[in-house]
Length: 91
Image (cartoon, rainbow, N blue to C red; front, top):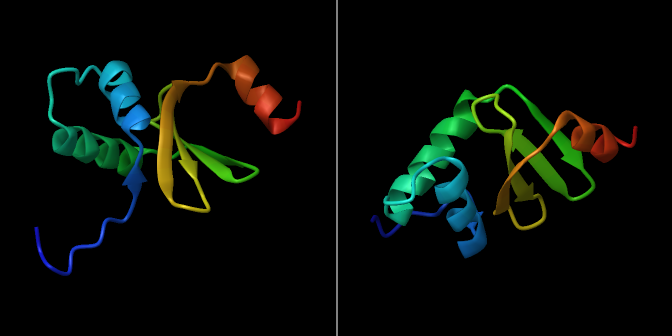
């Protein structure tokens, strides 16, 4: 790792654990899980904001990365059903 390296996003241990479960990466080290998360986020075209969080779809699936906008930290990885998405939008 470079002396000047600064991570773009922080990760909670809970988020890494959930990513391992939801993305079927159970036997992978954390650095590989972070790389997979980044790959999924870059491939995504679906996202929405909810108060101080951003939900980004994992490669346009029903699995979403939940990011705290204030600290730029991935806080969890969760499935969002269409019904839950409507409730998050206020519908």
